[in-house]
Image 1 (cartoon, rainbow, N blue to C red):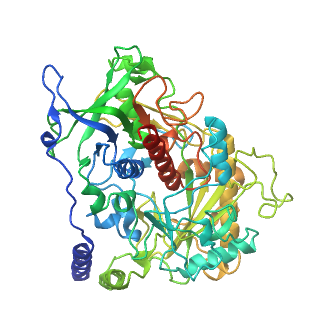
Image 2: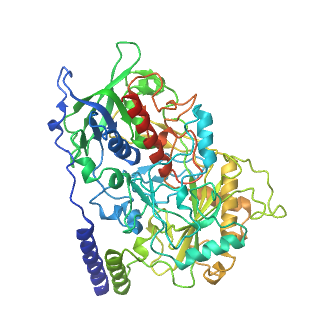
Image 3: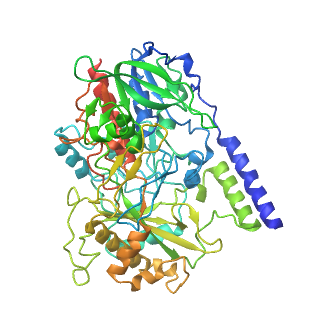
Length: 610
């Protein structure tokens, strides 16, 4: 047992050193709400006033707060249910993001039992820092599709947020096709896993072409190392770190509330059209007691940026949603809006776990004294030089391709009657992420001594759609989330085909020199190559998971919740801005699209009130 004690001590000591070095001075975030808001009294008539109230300090909310407060004449209040991530070490170190899962920084959400996926509840990490930082925005035709749905041609492929610095390791990237002066630094990780390079070469050998840059029209499909939201110091970039800098937080016209949950939006209904006039919010103590409620007034607009889960919940708690559902929870109906909470979509993913016979994976597992010392060495290496496996997002190499690709899936071996759900011929419906480690259910480790890697097979354009409903009228009750994974045969068939492609890559040189194809370890999946499509489909239904990309519950479009300027239809002074407004999933990773959406909305609002 001595090695366990020493190993834990070594790891704790190293993490303490890193924490001290990475911790930044905490910005002046407000938790004493009485300084800038009023307690709700019996009359409920007194408010402190702001021009704009932004509900939610996630990916979109931080962008909006920064951009709108650039105008010194606009008073902006941002209300965030959690706290700042700037002092959370695991949100800064790229390889540590899974340590946030099931932690004090996570909502620990679970879906409703999935009828078409083993009747299991699926874990949903919730938070803008709980992802693998992949900077890939989807296909240009995805945004053309948005423009067609919204009836607004300004929804073309936009991104003014980038700051890309040319990297000599990647000469194929054309810097002229990227932003150079935006607040969000993107680039390639400082660490290169040998197995990731082998994966890319094997992908090309099975017929997936090399892509010079996934983020431009030159390379929507193909294989390469992915760009990431990781800066030149090997630190995760969030919209909080990029947009809410110390200089921005010092603006006198911008204030931030933290640990404050918005209970509802307030409306003036005297004119017949509900107008958002402010919000009511409160906090909860560590003992579970709800503190007194406060109210603040918005003289211009309230913008909800709570994300795909909490934006529709806030709307429904405020009386905007399906009337029958609201009345069931004794919530007065302000506006019957049946689309609120509908159209819930997510990228379903399947982890294919295989044995690595080279010993080049699993470098950050501390299960005895020796491996604990190795982890401590890597922690120091990361702090001193910003290099090593901790600088990796553990998803460096990716392949995007189509399920109807007749090179990858020869007609002699595969039928091609699968429905094309993509937005265009250059848009992929499959993605494989190469990970130099393996786990059960997101972050539950395999056996300690097992050297393994995993390929995450992702369906980027599913046809299954679910919904989000209220559990109760209590703002602290999690809503009922049902993404309806694998409801359609299409989704199962495409994922099975993606697994076939991943196995093909694993059994193609140079991956054959790293994959132990003869392994029979019960935690691994080498036997899948002997399963029929029907048997693989059963495994997919049992093991499908989220890739952390739920969207669509306040969707944009003719039958949706918001219009092309993200105004909630049937109301005044109320908008929604986050992934919930997506009319469809993008063919990749949505964070960039959320940032671009917030940038566009900030420009629209500034023009409107200039």
